[in-house]
Image (cartoon, rainbow, N blue to C red):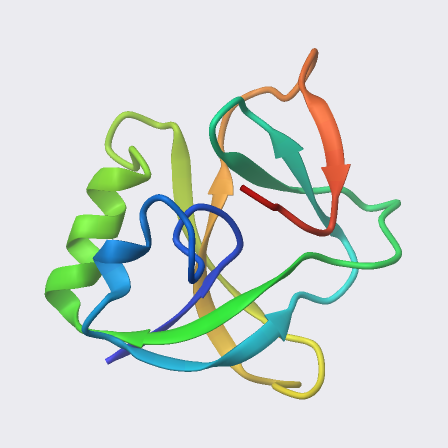
Length: 119
């Protein structure tokens, strides 16, 4: 099982949440400061931004390997749209190392939306 941090359309109620339907929800979660969301139209992209003081809020899930492969496809990892990374979360999951997806392209011209994505 892999612990994955999701912050956009994969969250409960999101348009792509079906990918996580049979996986285990762990709880609400937040990154440490240094990450922000940008609106990319129908979905957000998380990027590192050193000046951020808040971090990104989302959800923590435990998923199996087959779902992780499906998420890699959904996130366009092979095409270079997103890249899968590991990071540590802020309290209450402080110190937990998780997998997540960072937007891999330039965000110039995109709208910075801060720490939360709402569909």
